[in-house]
Amino acid sequence: MGEARRPDRVAEAIREEVATFLAEGAKDPRIRAFVTVTAVDVTRDLRHATVFVSLMGDEADKKKTVEGLASVATHLRSKLGKSLRLRSAPEIHFRADESVARASRIESLLAQIRDEREQHEPMTTDDAPDTSGASED
Image (cartoon, rainbow, N blue to C red; front, side, top):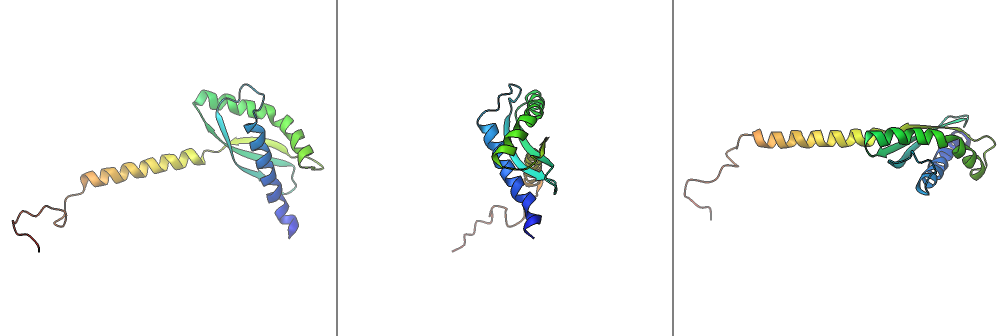
């Protein structure tokens, strides 16, 4: 049972280490976009780790940042092997996590639909102003 949870523990440790590494300033000048490590997925045999990152910036900066991250992956792998004391450090693969952008897009579309619905809804008799002149007491 403990063995089945080990990849999850290793993935969380990798996420923390990679986030710290990026926050302290990775030395590759291509890493220009604001990078947030959102998740890490590790294979059961701990040989491969996919690091999901959310990138903020324009498309050119994002593209360069992905190239820079791929470039530092080997250095990061050796750093992880030492800091996590793993017999064999996993091969690191970076992947852009589009879920944050997708969620933002969905939220803006829903807001737009709500606004359009409010503008086009006919007034019901409950919403209409009282023009009878009689007041309720």
